[in-house]
Length: 157
Image (cartoon, rainbow, N blue to C red; front, top):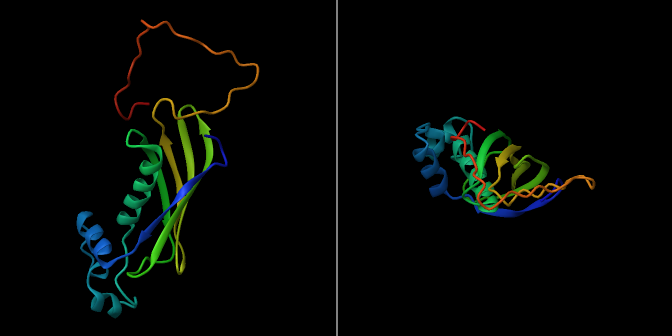
């Protein structure tokens, strides 16, 4: 993996069920996420997805690609065009940096109205995933089979 690598796209149909379930699961009871008439009264053509659901879908996109053992260190997203029922969102990612077992990924999620979500995520990769290239004059280091490793508690690395 290296900077410039593109992650495979993930296509997500935006359904009423997804919008309402995401709002309920994230305890966001704002009526614009589940009540069509209330959303229209507030100027929206329909209910729309909340940012917490979008954040969860971005996390799913990353863990689908990097695997369940990756750790999302930082996810910084911004919403743009709303996700309305009946539309489709396509998430795409580009690796912008790989170093010290982490990758920074630029994320864009687009729907029929434009960019729904843009941002970046810093992902700690499972061992063996990060393949940042070493300088040509670097020397590989081998450890004996009986060498021990230290694992830091979550959140301390």
